[in-house]
Image 1: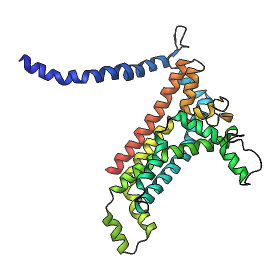
Image 2: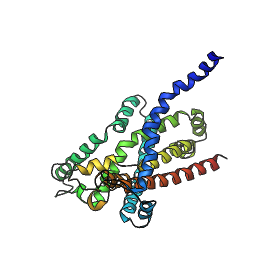
Image 3: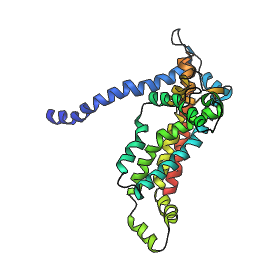
Length: 299
């Protein structure tokens, strides 16, 4: 009997290290940060319980939170379609026209996705610097412009640089996912379409796109969730050009950047935690709605 009990206990003993680490470094911080969101606390003095005042302030009287949320949505709406389009185009080209050099192109295009945000922020800060930036030097040498463009100092151009950064970094990941989806499409479908006289465009729109519907849904869902958590790239980019929080006119201030600035620069940890949970609620609502739509389509 004792041997049987010991044998039954073995699986739980093997799982114990994982659950211990998970509770200590994941579950406890999540619960404790919610407790902090119900207080006013600067990290030094004793915390003061304020209930849901932080959440009421967040959703009713904080225009900066809504501005950061709006900026995040604009970046998502512009960047994700470009990422999907570039990734799909590159995947199709590699599948149909560049098979011999596929490995090299995959490596080159996917490398930005695994590059650290610090390096990316530094590279783009140098490229788009007003005086010594490579982009300005190239445009002036070609005669396209006659004066320096302050790429990172104007709201519109600053957001355009962030969008370009996001597309450059993530379209390689999209390409890899689309190539995985393309590998699951039978060549018989394309051969049958060719026999019926279908050209490349018709095969692309009538076979490739419909057969990649699940890949599209996965990439769009995960990209929106990831986009709502955007922080490192714009923060590092603009911290290297003068430390302006949110860029010029706060045009590139994202929700997570606002949360970070509130908690770790203004030392308002209670309100910063409330911002984090407010964003969590928004992501949860989007994810549950999207999952519900996917289930309805499958039914």
